[in-house]
Image: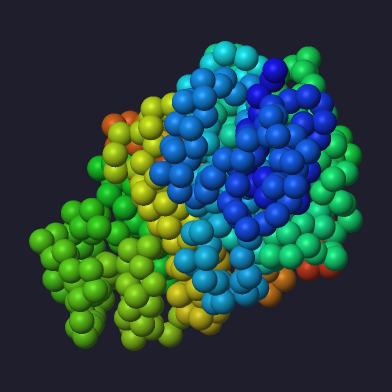
Length: 235
Length: 281
């Protein structure tokens, strides 16, 4: 049975990715950051054997290391790692109004979180599919930057894209393959509750994401950011 | 080296040249061309500042004392003893520190009504040997790099924008390097520097969108050489060629047609290198 690990799986896109993978017969480790959020419990009742709930805070090196130990103790090899966990912060529009502590938290989760995950789970991925997936955003594209605000979130996604580029350079020759996914303008839970803004339902975006994550490509040497409509975005 | 114009510059985020910091060289390039330079330096760059002080004089009349490790900004030569004719001032202004930057800005404001051009160098390099993704990252160092190079860019702009607003050029200049371009070669292993400088590029892009409509102009100079090995293989700064190239890029105006935005290079956010080539982000 193929094994996937999805971070930020409590709700929204991460939860829906888990659901789609389970529906395709995968065994899924769902990274759980919010133990009181009930959706994963309900999903586990539906998939009691295939779904494993894994306490996971990607902004904590200790938490990521513990999660990797737990999966390692189960003698599982991970085929697919989906780095989905992400946060944003409320901030003013100008540099005068920025809260740099909040900015650092966003960086720690959105940018360093995936670095931690790849570092600690790489030993568990050396057999199998060796697929590394990252949920990024067009907000991290410097080439197409049109915003005059949202510094913290945009900077964190640019930093993520840079990290993935470095990983791609280092790991491609070892057979690892990469997917960078822009989920579209989601009706996400980024602000704490499901947003009425946005054009895309997490379930719909997740269906596209899983298809992209699982499909092989003719040219794995090319690193691209592809969105929910199969459109490529520049970095 | 052609004199394009002169004025007053604040050059911040200067780190030690011994480990690849480019800011001291750029400060010297400006000084050689007759500019008045206020430099904001981080711990480790004291020797560079002392060397510039010896060559160009120092507004505060004293060399920067490397032994002073105070972190509360008191290393700044308190009440400025403004020596007539001195065009250089070194101020401790760690880009990770709101307090030091605020004090530096206040000191500069006490010496000049405005600055014409702001340069942020983001010279912080990883203090520990860098490793690939499976070599074990020091996450404290990664955060420190981000704090200094990425958030430090925003802190510096925040602190000095009021002075820049009253200047004649209203120009913001930033240093990046080829290892921090997502579309670049990315052959390095210094995740801290690459991620922080890439994020700084995004910060500068958002600032461009925000401030260009208000008449500010922007320059991003791309240093060649990857953000590779941190301390052991720092970016070489072949002064004076690269420093001169950066100076010229920062100071030279670019084409601008007030009635034709699309035909105006000033309205494009680009990174250029020492050969004048545009580099893809």
